[in-house]
Image 1 (cartoon, rainbow, N blue to C red):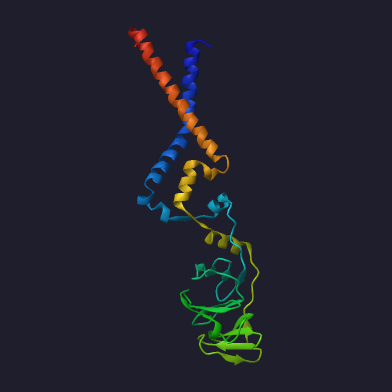
Image 2: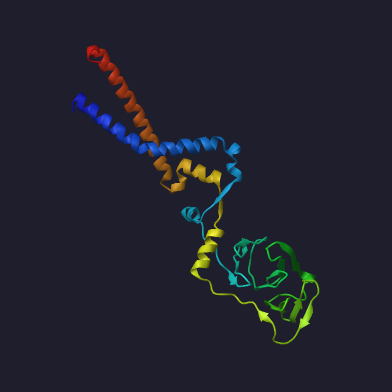
Length: 250
């Protein structure tokens, strides 16, 4: 290959590599600037919640424990309770029943009864001596009163303070409902783990966001940048050199 052919070859590949690497360089520049100003931008204190991003990171989806109607679907997972698409205060856990009266929403576990307003605000959590007996095996209602089922019998209360023995078959017990694909999809989106934005930006900048081979891809982009720099210098030098050798043609 003569010198003119080599020059055309380098110019052609210089342009091709420049176009291919442009997007990578833009991402690296933007993420690098963001990381340099992470405190001002508050990246460490902000998070992003995305089911797709969680799946990309290989994080497990939320696991459903139970679904109850309770005048609007109530869902329990190991980490959260949801009522009418609202995340309730608390850390979730195994539920034995959920009922809704005109005055409150009651959620029972084996050792506690959590009371909420109809809008999902916490009223109180009853444990130990505040309950008639433990463990609680089921939760139901009679009219406006909630009913807990224990090995020592069934007990009802209108406010969670005064408990009375219940006899008869008038209790409507809360039952776990079968889950459906729509519920699972909705819960997966709502309870997707929140990832700090700073971590996502850092992983994008370093290439770790793209898995095991991501950093190698960034390394390859750096080598492309080196090749572009060297070829650009060579092209400029050759142009300058040609002007010196043939000043009348320029």
